Length: 229
Image (tube, one colour):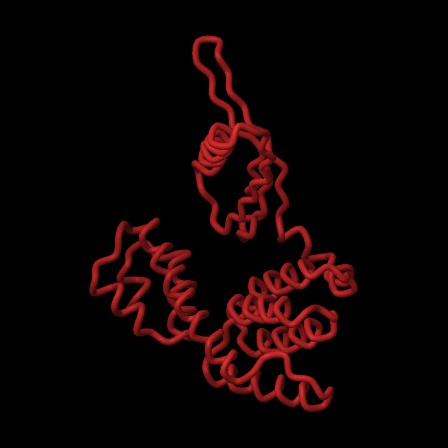
């Protein structure tokens, strides 16, 4: 069995949690398990690869291969020429990290990545899945989102193809906003404890631009009020 863990935040107990997952999977299915880790956080020196505990001469160890997506920042040319669809996922993640406070640059990256997606020659369902991911990870303020869709429509018309209908775009945008709200609520719960119903309602009513701003603030905020003020 293959267990893949994608981790977006630095977490003190992360190796122990992996050991727990690995042990439970092995016990449940009675077969070997290989655990692999993809680190998508922006802490360059956080690179967990091992868990170990020992008591009275008894020792348990788990070593797991891990990759850091930040390590691909100097390999964008290689990623851009790769036919592997996951190269596009890594490029989108790197662009999201680099343009966190630069919406105009994010728009440019998003258009370029969508154009590259269309030219990969994938099946339509695969294109829709990757399109949804790009749209989610490179979320834009509403005004720039409109510019993005106009540009993509122009590309589709020029190349006589349409992979994503207007109705699908609306559905993807709705799903993206719900995902952003769910992610922020999870971050709040981890850092400040379970959010109140009032906080939940406020987050669920917020637009994408506000959710992005709050998600940035939570990285350095010491209180929940600092996040939502």
